[in-house]
Image (tube, rainbow, N blue to C red; front, side):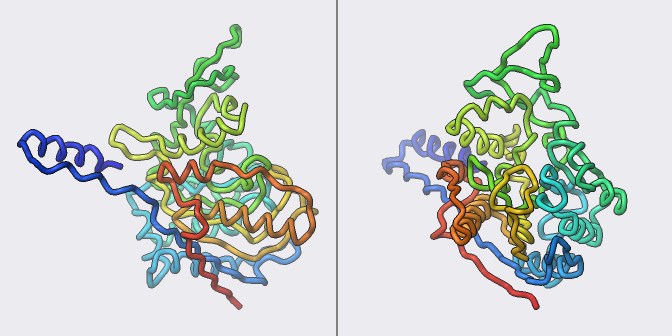
Length: 352
């Protein structure tokens, strides 16, 4: 999108010089055809136990396929640099079994460290620091000397706001909250962690359903806890499915998206899949899948996840069908990723 002002300047200059030719229409913007690499190892997750060595091999294979690199270090350095502050976005809320698995995150952290990313410039983050501690991410962070952060705990950047025409009642923790006076606001502020610290993002999200939009995947995960006064976005589906893409597409003064343009890699942790339950760990609705999915397109991964969850429910004859959400089409329209299944390319790699 940064080329649009330059294009407009060229058109104006041509008109000022008296050109008889009509300015050509700018080319239609389309998302690139996404590629999803599915790494499968049936022995990686058995009876609630994860084989760490097999996960190491799956992450390495997925990284090399996603980047086209010859070795893992080159793969990571094609995505991030030692000058970056790399934020690893996880979903800690559902816990160790149904949320982002520690083993997958551990492998990514070790890969970044080996590639030369300083430990102090690696941040494992989610909305709440409390959830990260409960899911034992603090143990992982301490082991490697990396940082742990909650985007809500980091405070809000009052200079970066999102104004949407719906009021929300401010609560404790929101900018402008007053315990002695009820206040409403149509403004949300972005987390300082997002606006002032993280320069590249690796999103690792589990394969777990979402009752409203089909999957609690990358779009939901990247926006969870990103802004304050966000309860107002949940008052209706129509508001929810436009607010999330707006958060990911929010730009700074250089027209760079705080989240969207910093997203280096998305990994769907499909070692297990939870087809019901949303934010709670419900083992009786959980099945082993033994897969990790890799892509640079969060929308394509989420749509693929919804199809996978629905197929499992059909196989098990589970009568639950989340509404067909426009979230993913809306995300496509603002160039976050591609929601059309016909345009994606899914490659499967089975490891013995």
